Image 1 (spheres, rainbow, N blue to C red):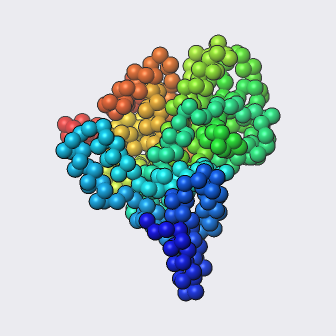
Image 2: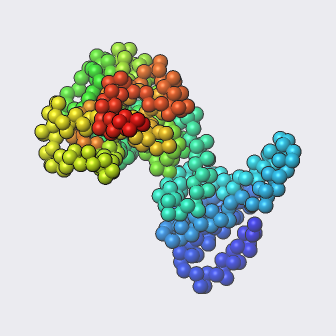
Image 3: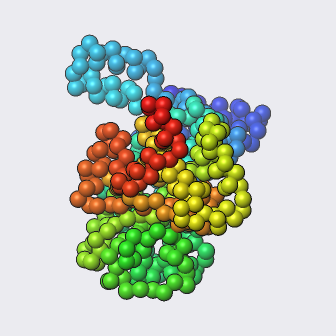
Length: 439
């Protein structure tokens, strides 16, 4: 590795001809090299701050150039990896295993650990991964950067470091504003709407990390009701009356939002739901049912794609094209009946690599929930109608069954669904066609 002095001389020599963006990139790379070669803790922290400040100035081509350097110059040395692997193959001792582990670890992992010494370093690295993820499809050479950051952040953000906090009207305004900003399922329409979501018959809980004290990592919104809700608009109505929470027998998880894009793929939701359910059960002994009212965001897109290869769906697609199509879809109407059947089929039978294509289904089934009930016109917002023809699904968390359901899904990708929902799926046009072909 070049010495910091050599890199600085290279800097000065190239500065006369480099563009400003090139100089910013070179400066940031030089500081990163210097940080890796620094041994003193105090001077290392100062260098980490300087490197993060330089990194914060990068944008556009300069930022992409920096990530390219991270991918190339801060990767493991192939010869060292090969030598360590050969030694371990010949003698699988603990010493050779440790040597191999050191050999395959990219130097950028140590760089990220040292950058994390600076104040704000954790937040900067979460933001760095967000930037990498946004362009990863077009820049596949950055996959190693993503993997290294995901590995470290997965350790730094494990459940042991997270604290569960209830969000209410007394929570600092900075955090409340971020809730409104991050809410990804049902948009919060201003302060009045938010306040209703935080009343006594509602609950909002979030995980926080000590390195990001004012940044919710993930939050969940809960309505305390009598019976399992089949429509979301009453739960979201800012003018709805506040009811006695102590009389509720059901907790409806109607929104869960991951706030940090840079932590994508690091699982928090399963811990959050289970802990919130346990806490609510202790606070309200009458609560017997814990269920979601969940969106089905990909249904209409899948239906449109399926119609291209299944002519029998063309009539249904044509019916959906009418602006007021749902007004004619009374109980028993053909459009309503077939849409419900196809949605149940989509949730249970349409899979990719053995798992449901619906991301929300994967999340809840993977956490041990049971797919319980499909609800007609449960979300009549513009988003709900466009994504799922207004339908939503209840997933039920029976705490005594959660582990068994989770194991069934993890080992066999088994979709645990109620008999009624399974019957609905089997009655769909596509299921009947598959049965006719003997599939």
